[in-house]
Length: 330
Image (tube, rainbow, N blue to C red; front, side):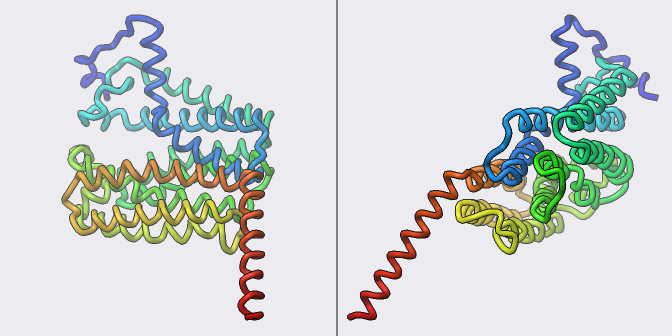
């Protein structure tokens, strides 16, 4: 089916380094980095700032392997539409540099390695969650939703929200409410993040008949959906502070500051939905937002942060008491 369109593409690697590069490209490494940041943030909270370095390393490596496996299968499944889009035409599969069978074997090997490492070094729950991430991304998003529903990103976003669950399970062996809140944070963050990108490259999606929201309903309704999801995201991030009490003052300040900027950018896009520079700005900021929010979680969970905020609270309380006594005495 695909052979006829690939005959004009370069098919041969010149050396081993080019082979490695092609397989590396199949895994979509830039996407993986953000997934690993959410995994690490989750582990940091679960371990209350005292993460076992070996467990952290193995879980992040396993998470990277699972995501790489899912991304490879995604490339395999989408190789027909990838050929049609200028942005993706030169990927390893549509360009013919890697054969579909080899890509599938590569994906299976990555998944098996990920499952084995997590089972041996962490626990079975984290390994099963990592595999569920692959299944959700491949079956639910890539196969079922991507080409058939404007809600593909919303429901498919669950796959991208699984890494925090993997991280939490790797540390504790179970899933608490805090883990599910972290899942919800990534879930609500995904539509604004991805729809902003979809607004920028709408013509590409339209060309291959992928029903991304901007293609079907246009920029203005998409900007409205981005605005709604951004507004929903902010209170969800604060659930870790109240009622769960797993995060403190540092995270609260970071979440509010980052959320405020996110809301402002979503509002700007809502006012000028056809301005794709605003969509680009929102998309880039959404990546920074998630990275800094996870960094805020990590810093907040450190024992030294607890000591400093505890001492500061104590000093403030004693200062208030002193002032109260002084005023009442006066």
